[in-house]
Length: 260
Image (cartoon, rainbow, N blue to C red):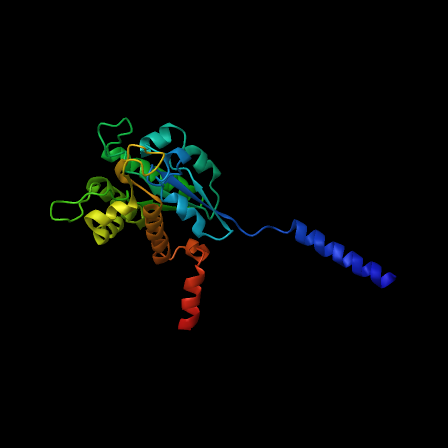
């Protein structure tokens, strides 16, 4: 009876210890940017921001908090009080992926951000992220689908992408050059096949777009996944700690095991 009581007490003690033990460290990856990254409403499908598939490639220790919004620039993201809640919530070990430019660079839009201001906002995001001992990642704006008469892909973000590159170099921030890498992907697909990555639909093909859609900026599900895979590959190439939490596909595990 005495031994049974001691055993029961030990089990109860163990259960109490495990119940109040600290949970494994959680990392939040914040995405701030524009419509090419954002979560879409059902009424906009099959338009898909690359942040949507990106979120499912991590293990249970990582939460992807996608704060990107359609039509936003660095200026409007701050003016609408969208950045401040992120900065306040940041904890040591978190990440902020920063991708703006599509709306900053267009002078006719209300969201237009002059070049010097664009750079200053990027620096603000970086410095306020680092102040919380979190890691900023600068990302050049993802490419639009544009080809010249010879079938060569054309860049549409030269000035603003270069600002991101220079800011990353000056601030010693990790850079993902999504503009150049996505251009290379579009070139690989070619003029016609690259349409398969974008929200392009013929009339009657999808109930959300009964009259069809010809969009060379926003991705469909395939395009969004391809862009997310570029970002994931760069996370590995940059040797970020976050890379250790990318879920490895079973097929890849099998190949690795066979290689060993």
